[in-house]
Image (cartoon, rainbow over the protein chains, first blue to last red):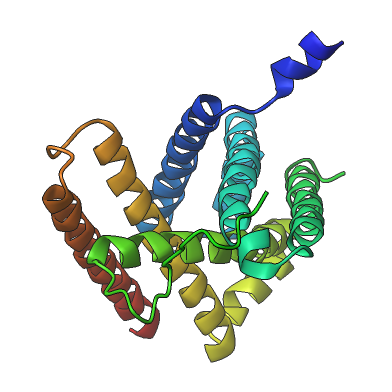
Length: 122
Length: 127
C-alpha cells in the first residue's frame, strides 16, 4: 500500500520535468491558436466550429487543459509554500495554505470539467 | 521548528533587487494571474462554440472597452509568463554560461521581447 502511494508522491525532479513538459504543450497550443487566428482574420462560426469539432483538436485542447492543471498545481504550490509560511505569517499559515491549495484544486477540476463540457457538449 | 533568533534579512526596503529578481517575481505574479484569466478564455471558447448566434454575440462583446481591457490584461499576463518561461527553458538547456551576468542579460532580453509583444498586442486591440 505504501509503495503504491509512494509512486504518486511528488518529488523535486518529477515536478521539474512535469513543469517543463506541460509548458511545452501549452506553448504549442498557444502558438497554434494565435497562428490560426492571425491566418483567419475573418473567422466564421462554421470554420471555428469545424476546427473545434475535429477529434485531434478536441484532444489537443483537452491535453492543454490537463497540462494547465499540473502546471498550475506545481506552480501554485511553489508560490504558496514560499509566501504563506509560519515565518512570514505565524502559526495560522499552515491551515490557510492548505485551505488555499484545496480551493485551487477545485478551480482546476472545474476548468477540466468545463472544458470537457464545451468540447463534447455534455 | 522555527528559530526566532535566526537572522533573516529579507527586508525588501533595504535590498536593491537586481533585474533578475523583478523578472522572477513578475513570472510568479503573471502565472497566478493567467490561471484566473483562463476562466475568461474558457468562457470565450464556450460562447463562441455554443451556436452561430452566440458566436456573433461574442464577436460583438469584443468591441466593448471593458471586455477589451479584460482580455488585453489577461493576454499581457499570458505573454509575459510565456516569454519568461521560454527564458527558463533556454537556461535549462545551458544557453549562457550560467553566470549572474548571463542571467541578467537574458532577463533584459525577456523584458524587451515581452514589451515588444505587448506593444504589438496593444496596437492590434486599439487599431
